[in-house]
Length: 390
Ligand code: PMP
Image (cartoon, rainbow, N blue to C red; front, side, top):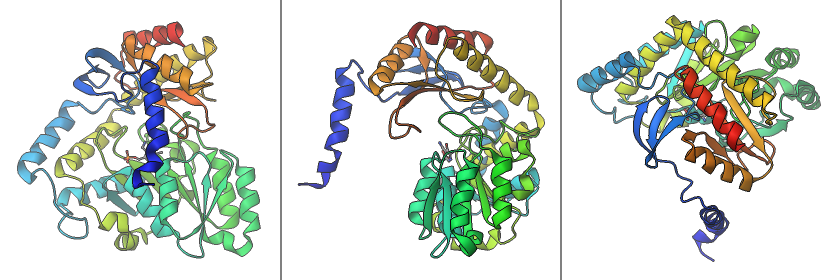
């Protein structure tokens, strides 16, 4: 027995992938042509699986802001937010986000993953309870692992099941942190947030919503599902990322509770890692201002998303329950998904291949994520390739 023995099953799976004709499951973006095109593994590819919802990764103003910060402030901060790693722009970005969400407090983290680890493990400790939707993202599960609270899962998008479990907690229900996502990352379905917020209020619990995939995508101003549903006042903590609509890397938590500012100093994943680089913060500030001033990007994103979703439905593909920029096709087996994913690559279309255990129901997914940057003829190409292959 060695430390490596536990990886033998994984090695065997990778070997099986190689044997079914897949040279490598690792896709290498060798040259970026635009937010929706790249040379991948030696061939030109339309990118239809990037989370680059507003297509801002190569936006000239964002790139210019990043370059300027790089030149004046350097490549990295070389320190934690609580030591030498808070620059004026980190504070300015927190202020921008406070203004955007109309919140008292915002914390900027190094990634969205770290934001979830930090907020979940710090907010809920011994004697508290965390109730999470069963389909929550790995970063939420990992935040729960880091916490000493009791963890209870409720059925995906089922407020009745949530209420049943809260009721059993009796007076402890008030010390409960309920966690859901805005748009779920695998199938693109929305949380029933009005019903969940109503349950939270009935029991005096707290509600954290991960809007990683809904920032810039949902709501009249792009603030996410809480805005779209009209329940922002009932959401205690909004967590999100800079790595999708904002085209960079980093994370945040926004809250109307002024205590968030103190929680920062108890938050180990915030304290014990270096702060985001100045160039990242600068491009993110610019991307946020574009998100706010150019709603037409969101509208273009939805036109592309609705077109693809409707077309996949008309082809009889097993898509998620509602239209969203995440359009995932469910397939029965891992083998079928791998084979079809390879054929899509051969046709010049890159989508995300999602295999168990990352999938909600143990099946496999070919997951597309649409961008405002996709041109109509690129959407045509994606549709034609799926019609041919899937
Ligand atoms: N939450 C959700 C729902 C996500 O999908 C992701 C990223 N896939 C994250 C958090 C983590 O975000 P980041 O990439 O900033 O670490």
